[in-house]
Length: 286
Image (cartoon, rainbow, N blue to C red; front, side):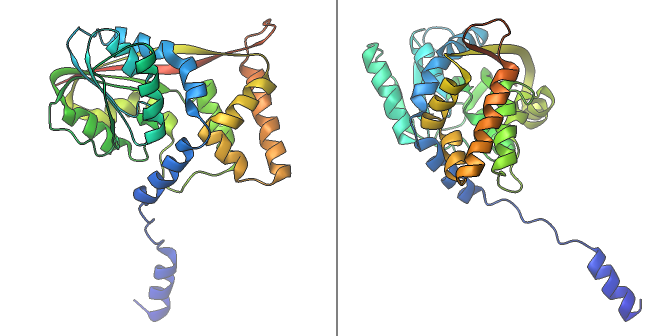
């Protein structure tokens, strides 16, 4: 090959993309979820935790792990069913909200522990049931998360998840945010956890059975402006997105989010009523 041909070939061959820096990404994510007060929004989702516990058919006395538990919706639902519950999250302030709620309901015996969904500090096969409601889906390395959920679940046990879908309201909220504040390069969209094909692929042959069902959670606020105010004040990802923009771009993001809320709002309602699709997943461990 001539010198000129070799040079041309070198130019034509792109450099391999650098692997995402998952440690740095998670550091930023922890700061995002620790900002605001997610519990203000999170408590409205309690019904999803109850529904998921029914979907996995929890039995009294079962050893249950709630991963990326946030302020404890699935944790409390499992404790109400007399299970032995361990509640984990990598944001200590969210675990504290869960403790407060458990104390208020006099639910005893819940073990609250700080933990990363991609590196769970538990032995293999430690739990009968592993749960996650709108939590694990935000970890940056999905295959690693799936591997950890499988590892700590005993053979024949169940893994239950609730994940926002790409085409549902919350999936579209994150798509809208991404147009204004691009996500880190190389990071998988969290909404892919709401796709059955991706879930099946990530859990692989270690899942003896994968059952999925499309469900809806309904957001209810006074108006689009009211919902935006609450999410902008308390919901970390939106709070941080606005904080990364100057005033004109903040206005543009606000306009797009309000328009999206109006698009998804149930017609004929006097207030804001938004059904948001999520994928309910129940996996039986091989």
